[in-house]
Picture 1 (cartoon, rainbow, N blue to C red):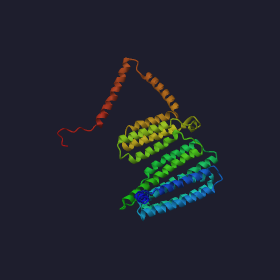
Picture 2: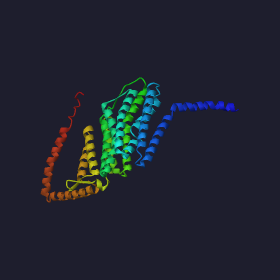
Picture 3: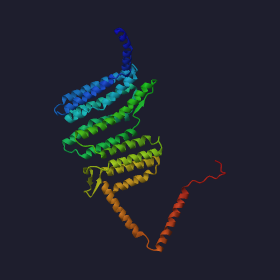
Picture 4: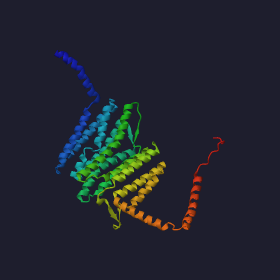
Length: 409
């Protein structure tokens, strides 16, 4: 009976092994363990500022692991044609390429000279790894794509060291973080403008072409996400809370990139709706900000800079762009209104007070200009008749000439 039971279990075991072979979860487990190990080692070293060389050793092991992933991924894609396994390995390599484990970040925080040397070496190796990926997948990275990816990864390596030096010189302020968020917001727009990043060589293997396409997308998307992660980590490491107003630049940057890339492929109504929604969200996020972010300029006679005022001006420029690019006339008065509102004040309360004062002045001016006799009202009506005559003439002149009924079409 035992033998019969064993025989019955053999097909189930073969099915289980076949599923494991088809899905191959071991690459996922390996990547998770590597990232977990990096997080745990760098996290334990974070509490002791003197522990430097173990982190350097971790960086070396990390790069050896990346090299093995690239070699195995290229072998599986080019020789064995196991596109699914190769795709997962190469996606994992793109993830590791962008220091999502914050290992280089930790090293820069511990020792700036050693961190700069190691980060510079790692940045040089990024070029080698990109060349290997190009060769292995049959891609051709354009000069624009190479510069873009290298710049993004360089920003990942430079940001922690920059903040560390500002802390050392006691110069780190809230405005530095806000400026970093504006730099991050500009990256999606630059990315959208700088296409194409890669040239795909078509092949007879549909799965390989899909792998190439997804790899090129991830080479841009993951550095952007990693840069966002590093910036949020900089807030945490330097004990700076993340306020809502710092998210407004990112909202505008993503919207502008979307408008640039997609505005010709969607309806004008959708472009206008998206732009207005993003603009309102950005202004609402910037409505409240720390008092330290209101910077007096020109002797302090007026606080010309504030996140709210800056966001309103940038949003007005975005509305103007949509108006010129797609001919959406509704965006023009919105842009003018934002510029006018930004000129009223740098805070919501200042804008409200000055708007109220302007309304009172306008009411007083209107009261002084209103006629006080029948003859005066007659003069106003006479002058208005000429104005409406000119408006009627202009309306008639801009009309198209109607087609006669018997005129051939």
